[in-house]
Length: 213
Image 1 (cartoon, rainbow, N blue to C red):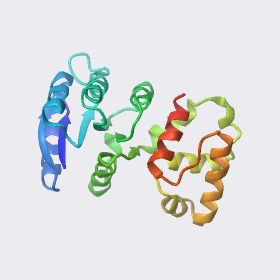
Image 2 (cartoon, rainbow, N blue to C red):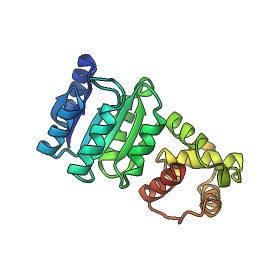
Image 3 (cartoon, rainbow, N blue to C red):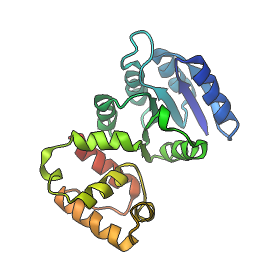
Image 4 (cartoon, rainbow, N blue to C red):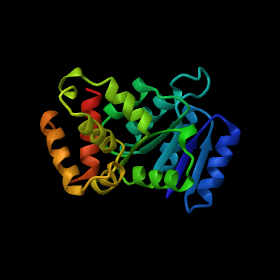
């Protein structure tokens, strides 16, 4: 799997490169700024780009802007954002671009290498991997109605759906049966007027689109 890394911190950039090289990934380029990221994506057509949001020169949203430009030039490029902060507006703008292959993880919460690698593979395959804190803040900024019609349990299930969890994983996390999870999901999608789907990627994107409407 071919990867491009964009991270201005040299130690973290080298650490990510070594970590991924040692786990079967092909790191085609590791760069330190937005323009170099766009050039690397155009040149290498990676399966996924791992990108910090804040990079030189202003350390504001250069990484995100570069991701949007890269996806415009090389459509469907999968992107995994790694950030120190929950950047709600940045996450929303990236999600509004449509399509799958989107992840947003907080650096300080990536404590398990196996989970991180699994998330990269899921996003590269067109799925979604959202940090629970990012999801919580997106839900909090969502439209008051009809989110307010959801029960507390339904909001928990919604959050786990948005993280990219399967029905089985949601059942385990909430100590429920899969049948119970399916009933909650049916109710959630009805209340939010979203088309139900057995496809995990489609339902995640539908929920995230709703939260960022």
